[in-house]
Length: 128
Image (cartoon, rainbow, N blue to C red):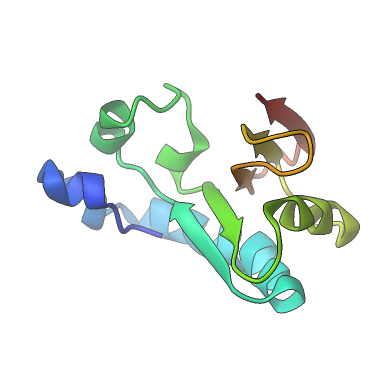
């Protein structure tokens, strides 16, 4: 959830030593969203988890990105489609705050953004 080739390349050391609050948020994200989803769908690849402010700026992330709070992950399926991950999050009634079908096509997103936070907005968005 901390790994980043971009942070390593740009020598953004803060990426790999986040504050305790960030670690707690990542643990909650895993416990409430990612682990139950993995149990249902099998292996999941996290392509982006926590992003330090410097890394978020380097990758041109949203200025208010939940990634910077340790509350969000971008995921891809290993043995299931990304669309299946997106649908299973809803079918399992996981307590997501925000879920985004990111790019791709009408049938398959390039990846799925999912977050967990106390806001629990259950907001579903589609980015094309």
